[in-house]
Length: 521
Image 1 (spheres, one colour):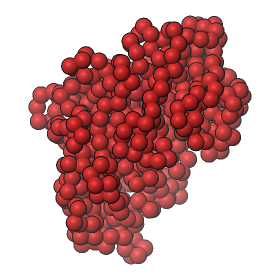
Image 2 (cartoon, helix red, strand yellow; image 1 turned 120 degrees about the horizontal axis):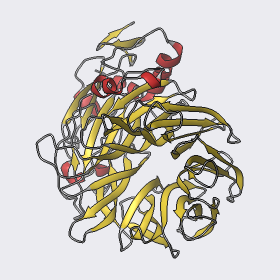
Image 3 (tube, helix red, strand yellow; image 1 turned 30 degrees about the horizontal axis):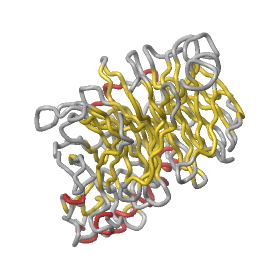
Image 4 (cartoon, helix red, strand yellow; image 1 turned 60 degrees about the vertical axis):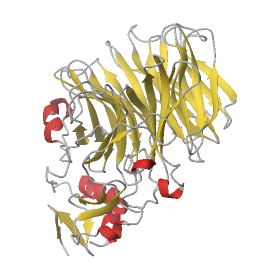
């Protein structure tokens, strides 16, 4: 097969996704290639979505624990599935083996990372908390270089409990969303901090009333300001309501609105839409389908609610993160409570709330999706955790979980990242070279303490250069299998791989793939 066929998946996937979703509503893609979609989320069968909804490779995660070349803890477990389209210069070859890593990152105490943003130099900025958990903690931010070395680490201290939740890069610096019990008007308040590129505090603002108010997420707005999401008990009926605050570039309030009903409703993720509106996700108990539901909220530019839609059934479901795809649709991740057992749930919807696809990742020990990043080809990467037994038998506790979807909801691959202890992933950022920065926390059994955890992977989710090498002398063109509807690539560990292109993918001069055959030439 010509290299163009493999590359076409990356170049044309967003356009073809739009063709199927918008231009050709009468064409129903085969269930074997596309995730099950349902416009009526209140009646969708989550069990079916978990068993066959993705139509993707059933990822068989391995238990390949080890250590990186610099002595830091980390491992990646391989899953069976398609590799992304070829064309990336592998970071290990480009940096003499220094490009990938999995290492602890700390401030000298109990340190937990809640969010991550990519810096322009290929490094990262993370945010979380440092200190004695539950008693006196400080907001913690740290910046690393392109090879994961600490550049600076700052704690923004105060006398009580403070907790960093999210970070975005903006204007050469960074903005942090946090919760503070050290300042403000109430039991807890939302806290917005603005840093320069060296971690110096430029300004900070506190938001909220006499009750408990918290921020969990933020996103930059088109005018240089921010929109922040969380919960508030300072207004409403005394139980938490979803809370959005929009600010200008100096932290001045443009709107401060609460959403929900008479039950507990909270927002954990937020995104700014290209048309100036805002979308958020969280947990909805009021007017739900039963229990708590994954909640999609859409507002206009002034914070007025234009859509409030629950997804789920009778169990506990929630949304933890949301991102805007290149075509303006939304990718959400969180949990689906199937018979009382949380499972990692990812879906794609349009801004009217129509469900385009959904996938529930298989597991049986409480899997959670905590962050999502969309990719230029219309696909998405989700991170979270899994505590399910290893496919080879036994358990190694919680592992960070990394999953890669294409634009149609097919699970291309997944990786368990971790070793014998417990690790969780809470943030992800996509890099220009196709690689990924993921972050979270790990538990150090020797010191009985938590450390932040930072992992740099290649486009296939691998995090250890010492394990790579199968493709150092090959390119995707060397792996051509002669078939017009497969994506040929050279996977760093396994060598040549041949993934079946999704139906509606381009092939030949004017054809489209259908059930593995190129038709329409």
